[in-house]
Length: 591
Image (cartoon, rainbow, N blue to C red; front, side, top):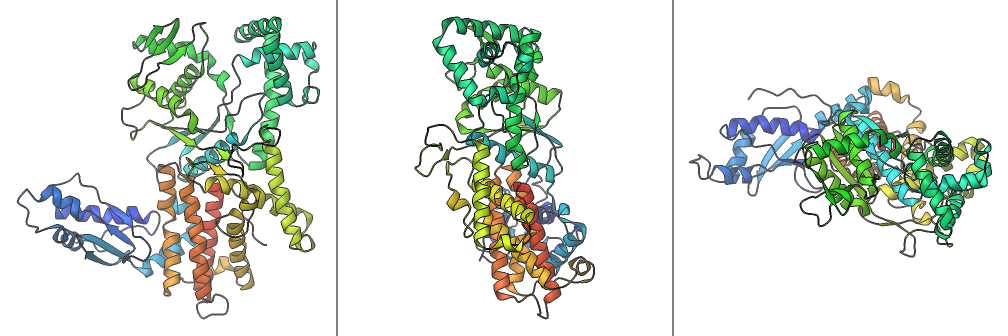
């Protein structure tokens, strides 16, 4: 067979799949639709990767007068037809036709050397999509951001970062709740408290949460106020300048609160709240109506959907719009105006049915393909609750939800106390101490959330997340700092070594670490495709494990293999930093 010339970059699984694709076309030319099935082998198994096509192929061809006598023979033929490649050291067929592939350590070392010179971005996966919308965080105006918003913000930011790394243009959307009936009571209460709305400042209103509760109390208890509030909604929606101005003032004060959280988390979002889509709603409802989807039901206008026992209401009986009308309109806008191919919504699992219903309505309208694997596509990224250590929903003693800013600041404070206890205030400048405490504290909160499968509930515990042992950000940040320290102590110029040195993977622990590094691209691709940041956390934790085994058994500084092993240390640190970046965590270089 002619050699297939493959690049020493990117996704190992895909590169092997290309080789086996050629082999399949030669071995079974009459079955052109068969896709290569390549998977990473489990640790301790023979081989680095497996090709698992033989059994499936046998079941397709056995009744067609084939020359093969069973799956092992199909496996042998696939190996025989495999193009020669520098990447593959050897192939063998085991059991019922499994093909075990051993990679060439020389090729692996060369691939890592190339990454050290060309940068880790050459390992970025390629996804079949150019532009995506990630709709995340999305707090409500005049209400405090709570831990549910924290999960949405952290998970959404990581998904956006992974897609951006994979060369997708990401529109990061903050779909804030800045419209609706609650604004009537807020504006009316504002007018009562501050007849001259021009003089209203954040300080004058004080805590917006308290202001919201007071207006809600009055709305529930005072019939006259309630009527005024309902009239205020009509005026606001009708565009009355005075009411619009008051509404804008309340929104601005809320944004200042949100910005304090985003700034701490280093999260960037572009706000396009519910109000943004208002001008488009009537047109979208009309389009759905023209397609015969909208029906009258008890005075409201609804879309009946197969498989759901309740219809999707798109216009309320009083003629007002609701979540479904806004969400359908936002989806229409994202598909048609923003031309997004993948739209991802990050909210708690409790909203799953709402998303299932309006996605189904969009398919019925012909906006989306019937298959949810085909682009343009939509996904609801659901997540579980944050629990306190008592196993109940996470709150403070007064049954109020914890303020996020306070929560993040406490993580930083605890982190700083631990650093001072280790005498770091004597070794570092106040700025270094503060920056490290922030990186560790905020990183710990993010990682504690992201390492769990997002669908499960997780228990919020400062003690656990700030522990420097086990699967925590603290442990991983320390591991990275230790690698940096080893490189510094060598006294060598690592940038110079990258250009002149060579890397070898002769020791089993060097090879195991090298293989794990080379699996980075396929891991990021899996995390993106399945929208599971926990896959990346698992990879990062395993990486530090492989590194620890390597460092325990392979002397670095002062050994005959010093140059090669320093390059392997540097490659590990680079991949760790890229993982931290994708998880929104700031790396620490000394500890």
